[in-house]
Image 1 (cartoon, one colour):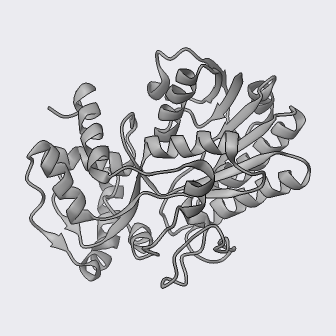
Image 2 (cartoon, rainbow, N blue to C red):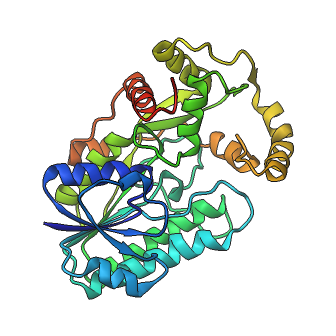
Length: 326
């Protein structure tokens, strides 16, 4: 079966390409510049961008299934045009190209952030309302709007499903992601301090399992939450310590102190050209809803997220394999 994919060079894409090839599929992927995540794999490259409908037409020609992963991730509070261009306009282009190419099924990667956090005292499941314009962060709004574009395609006859992961951890994180960089720095003792907060993290391989199950079992027009486990950052550091014996950071900042320091951390990163360890936007995310349910995915897709320690152990093993940590 010919499968086409956008976003193959990201963290999730790097794992999904390997899983699809292992399944025996023929794979054609859209690439822009950085191909580290898929170098050496037996797949076809199509040069292009989700903002370019012509390249999508080439990508989807003859494809039976499409996985749409491409997206621009940010926790900035300010509106960034690229977020809407890629996450909304790009998804609109993917939907149109799928309809034009008679694709049998589209698996769209959305995000937990497409759903409203509030009310905070009620768990999030697939019945939670989507984020509206004018609320939450621009990224959240873009992911909700992207799913609405897919639903508009479903109304026109497209067979599509969506999966909504939480924070992703795991191997084959080549770029790396912010959390991949965090695990790497914790493993080498280069992470200076922690924040007294937590988040829901899921193993990238569990996300892949859920997405591939959604391809074959998911119901048309439905979305499936793929969370893992809620983990406090000190506990994450202790898990890395258990695997590597590297002592965790001694200082844990309370949230109020981190919020005061966020503008200065952001300013310093802009001056030095580095990536901020946290921002006001990321702290807003950490203050979000703490309970995210995967009952629907478990019931319909057989989804079962693994324990955090397994993820940390395999991530550290991969980091050693690619010589990122000793």
